[in-house]
Length: 410
Image 1: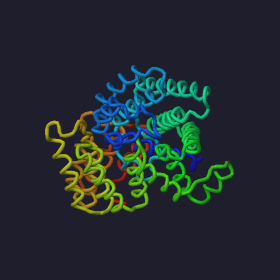
Image 2: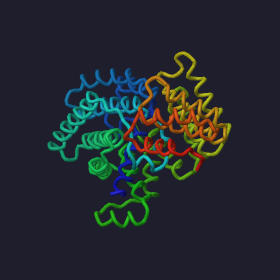
Image 3: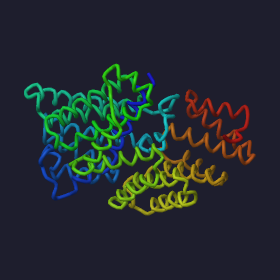
Image 4: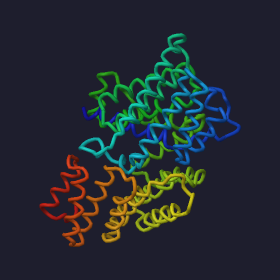
């Protein structure tokens, strides 16, 4: 069902922002332990997240592994480790660039992912472990708020992996609903447990944003939502959350982007970037938004500034340059600088460690730019490379179309 795929895909997207952005409240020495799991304020957790939001995932994972060992049987400790492991893998696969999710194209079609079976097995094992730990505590006390929150968070993380890597939308939708139910129960038990507003608020907003016919359809199943209520919940988490303050604000920025309110989204992201200037994804997101806002050469300059910063030794703990080159290619293409755009796309495709999906996307785009320049031989070369990289993908089908007939723009 397309409606369920839309809901789960956007829920996945929010889980993405939840886990890829820095936990600002953790860095605040004045953060109160009230209405949150005390483990969230442990110095080792805060240190691990310092590495996490610099995108130093190995540093974060190693610290969360140690914390996990120190707190056997605690679902929150397991969830923290799972969080880092999941998004280390998503970052490796170039799945943390929001340009991939800014429209509904990622809901359909055949996409190329390179699932690592060992990583997948670890993710599912940690998720099962955390849910088992939370279930045991909830059996002892059905109103154990911390266990309910941990279980909902773990379910959302599993949804993120299932939806983004495995494209398992039906199973993911059911699990996302359970995650929402866990966090809604937390809020019923303690309305001041602000962190639970993130998942619940996202679900509320996403269902409220569905086209009216879909709302009618899912309403028969008891699924309802409100954009305004969802935004209010997200604002509450942004203002009062202990571990979801920044995440909630980045979710708001993402919704603003989807609604084409680019300047508002830029202002939100610039504040976050000012707080964490060496977070590669924040810098990338500002450039992405400026491109989407139609800022032309200002967006090109933003991508080039990002790439220049990445050239400085140690400036970014981890930088996926292919994402910046892809965005630069799009920005240059928007200015009809097709030769420079093709060069940027091809640099993205040739980047070390580039994901298969992004490689295919960039080669297809490069071929289109060459066609627009009447460089047919180069265009054919790039189309064929895209097909060879992912012969069963939707973009390979598009490349085959342009092998038969040159691209003339659309």
